[in-house]
Structure formats: structure tokens, C-alpha cells
Image (cartoon, rainbow, N blue to C red):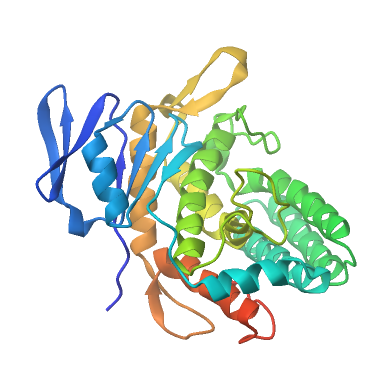
Length: 344
């Protein structure tokens, strides 16, 4: 039996989330829309203009459940949590190991390797499924370029050199991703490079929204493992930045977020009408589009795979939690080096 903490996503504008006995109740315009026992929930995520009662905030904090606030487009704004728990000895070891250049570079190399291998798998799959031979050849060449980046990352001697390899590989990957979009959908979903804050096209808006949800899951995973989410290896430490969660996110971006975005586009589950264009060129998912994506995301996390290292069949939603524990074991010295998840 597998257990995944259930997360409640509240996306209806002006919804009011409050406590009623031992349940969480959602009202919209004074009408009850949902009521769920608190013990069924692992956390609550609110998008945009959603009101939360102080009593509910206190109860969530008391029970160790997180409350995450995102803006309309899914960008992280704040996270409310109770007292920090976990193993102080692990956190001490984490801080000590992060200050060792050779150890930090080793973990960062593994993080980049996981990202590049999974991105390459995406492109190879796109090449196999491409109807146009020229496009299949282009995707294969891009996948080969990622293989070269993998070799370069493995011998990078400094963190800056490694980040340079990763950045260059990412540019090539996103340039090739357009060819995996079905021709009929390309006029609406052309990916003009990676743009953020704000996203400048529909594909980028969709990716940013998915990355925000993935980031929340990765942050929960590293904190559940007793690690310090602020202290990463590949991503530099900055005030307010969950650098370790960003590290963990890298190996999952292509296989969870990018692949789901392509599926939604190619199956016509999301279209141009699901996005809003705003002044200044920003493009954001509309309310209906967000609902579609969140539903697909939750369904995707329930799908089961066999983990290549543990050889256990698990729901995809548990992958970040398992990998976060591998990071903890690497820090403790129980694993020789961090092994990122590799999709088949």
C-alpha cells in the first residue's frame, strides 16, 4: 500500500476556506462548495484571490500541514508551516557537506546528469513518434547534443563550468521541443525559447504553471526528509530561495512537467482559448485552463511506475519523496553518491 499526502488545490476566485469542527470547508458566495475532513489532507494550495480563515491557518500549522499561496499564474508567493521538525543531526551534516566543494560539485553533477538524461529521453521519444523524417532527424541530433553535454558535465571542474554546460544544453533542448508539438497545434503553441516572469507565449505559460506545482512537491519532499530546503548544491543560496528543492526539481522537469504539457497540447485538452494575454505581452493560463492542468497533474501523480533502484512499484507522486531520501542518505554517507531518477 502506498500513501501520498493529499493536497487540496483551491482555485475559485473569492473562495473562502475555513475550519468547521475537524473539517475544512470551502464556501463561494456564502454557498458551501466542498467539505473535507482535515485528516484526509496533507496540505492546501490556494491560487490567487482565495480567503483563508485564521482558525484554519492555526489548525493546519498545529497539525504540520502546509498552506501554500500562489498567484493567479501559479507563481509561488508564500508558505505557512508549523515548527521545523526533523533530524538536527541530518541538518548539521547537510550544512557541513554543502561547504565541501568536492562533495557539492559531485551532487550538482548528479543533478545535472539526471536532468540531461531525462531531457534526452523526451527528445528520443519525440523522434520515434515523429511523422516527418526530417523532424525525426533533427530531434535525434538534439538528443545526441545532450549526450555530448552529459559527457561535458561529468568532467566539469567548477560549479560555474557545470552551470554553463547545463544552460547551453537547456537552450538546445527547448529549441527542439517545438518539433514534438503536433503541426496543427504549432501556430498556437510555438515555444520562443524559455521565458519567465512573465511567460511570453502559451507554451511558456503552461510550463511555468506546471513547474510551480512541481516545485511545491519537491519542497515538501526535501522538508519531509528532514533536509534544509534553502541549502542547495547546484543552485546558489539566496535569501528566500528554496535552492535544494530547485536542485531536486531538475531531474523531474522534462519527464513530469514537459511531457504532461506536450500531452495536453497534442491531445487538444488545452487550447489557445485557455490563456489570457495581458498588457506588456504576458501570457497566463485562464481559470478554466488552470483547472484542466491541475486535474491532469493530480491524475498523472497517481500513475504507477517501477523505480529502477528500489524496484518497487510506486505512484509517480512519490518519486520526489524517494529521491529526497536518497539525497539525505548521500549526505549521511550511506550512499557513495547521489543517484538521480532516470526515466525509461
